[in-house]
Amino acid sequence: MRAAGAALAVLLVAAPLLAATQQEIEEALTCQCGCGLTVHACNHLQCPSAEPMKKEIAEHLARGEDKETIIAAFRERYGEKVLSAPTFHGFNWLAWITPFAAVLSGGVGVALVIRRWTRRGTPPPPTPPPAAANDDLRRRLERELNELDREG
Image 1 (cartoon, one colour):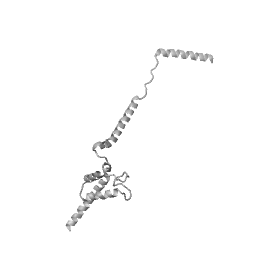
Image 2 (tube, helix red, strand yellow):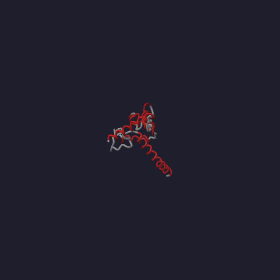
Image 3 (cartoon, helix red, strand yellow):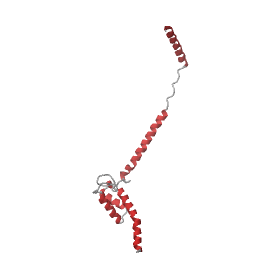
Image 4 (cartoon, helix red, strand yellow):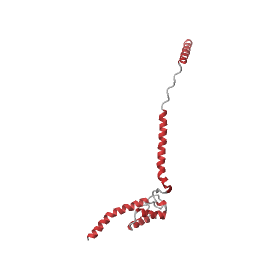
């Protein structure tokens, strides 16, 4: 009686761990029905791909296989396309690095443009004409004003 109780306690403790592991595996695999969702998130009723994959994952877990072994088995059968995220092997690392590099280079470009705009600032005030030119302009202005007064 005690052994049965201990076995039941172990099952109650292990069941959530197995369920979490099954969900993790289902989220690591892409459904092959063409929906583009993970096996866990596929919402097609009686999906011809997700339902058998879920059953197969449960069978693998019942045999005591770990997450990496199960994912490797699906990867061997379906290829890289079954994985919901690219691996870091080969050229797949570009899929991880490219978005970050694009955001970083865009940020640097925006910073450089803003820096250039702020350095321009306001243009310097115009330089006043030399004093001799001012005197000539004043005399001309006075002469023209006097002529206007005489005409009017």
